[in-house]
Length: 209
Ligand code: PRP
Image (tube, rainbow, N blue to C red; front, side, top):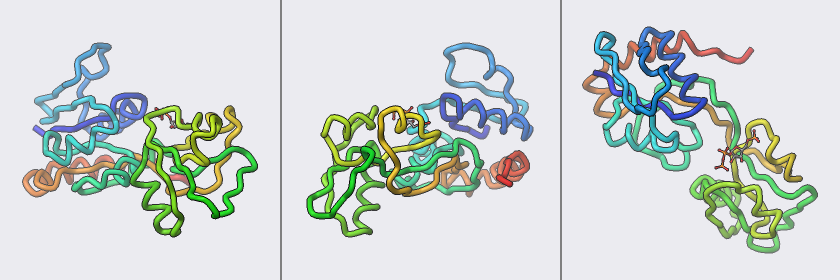
């Protein structure tokens, strides 16, 4: 059995669709239920629904052979996995945003609110900019509005959340999309099966024009 960790939610449904079209279907997964594990013995595949930010933990530790995780999570936690394929879905970007008109004159330590503390720390270290990181777990956009931080480092997809809160992107840090990842030992011992998945998924990837 090839154990596959899928990110729960809208992105995960798109990912499963790609796997199904690639010949690794498991129809039971589409039944509305609260079950988290599904398998299709005929296709030698077992799927788990896990929290998107946990996929790389399951894969790194070998509880899953392969999985699909966002580039944001891979950059933040740097798990020891192999990144096999960019699925070109779940596209967004990691960006710095601030209240409209905010100007960083570089004179004071910059207060940065974020869930992605490692990405933020690395980004500002490269610019030799002193920062004070404020770790939050959600609704990051509120921080500059209430004066908790000067800027935020967060995911921007459509830009609606920023717009509705009078914030704007000041810098883009990195483009993000969903990646197929593999456990390192699994890749060694289940090479043929994993390579088959990669090849068949590749044919499902829709590239931008
Ligand atoms: C993410 C991100 C932004 C929002 C961006 O939040 O943190 O808040 O999506 O999307 P948009 O540009 O399309 O408006 P998420 O829904 O993951 O919740 P969170 O508050 O827990 O981060």
